[in-house]
Image (cartoon, rainbow, N blue to C red):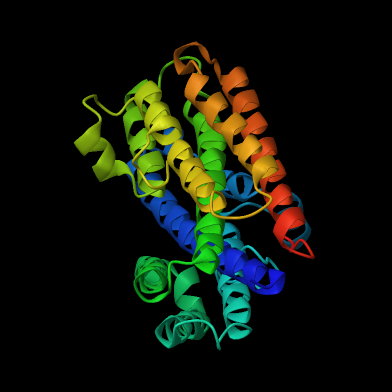
Length: 312
């Protein structure tokens, strides 16, 4: 397979996943602000921290108000990681592969980008925002399903799966990193009764609440949520599961030894982590180490299989 095609498939999956993740994150955060009393609300600034775009946001906006953060993450084309920016990049990657991609998938990608652009203002305005974000999530999931159901399960499909799963693992780690700090910020314990609501929002940000309730025989609490999102082998957005999917994809490729070595270090670090003893500062450091290794994994895949590393 041409390295250019492999790279386009990899980034197509990452951009589609990024748009879906951002839409869900904005939607869940909006509901969270309504569910919490004023003194317990986390506001909108944490979403900027999750996406790692604080520097760009400060250049473009004065304050992390709801209006500004939503515009930045949903409709601002100056932000390449916004929903519209991610879908534009996904469409461009798909356009260059129209001759090798199932026609239905190309039409869905192009159609989702057109829908997102045409209804952009709905994504910013509160009365229509949920409907708009739901259409993005449903459209992205339709694309993922179309590709799985119509594309040959060959090496090209493996690059799609690698991109999707690395993006998922990265987002899960970011949500854990930022949200766990917010959840434990009240040292006096006065807001402790609302922690459950906030941990539920963490699970919902990853579409994991129902699966957690089905498969974890415990109430929604910090230690059990962290255990599930980091170590579960079956939940599609758990970090351990995502890394296993990437390793299975790499197993069919040549020159895979270095990348597999990084994945096995990552999976060992996740599996061996004693979450009960990780205080907040150590948890943040642990997640930072995971993110550094995931960056190394991306660089290794790019250096091994692509001629030019695309920007994240």
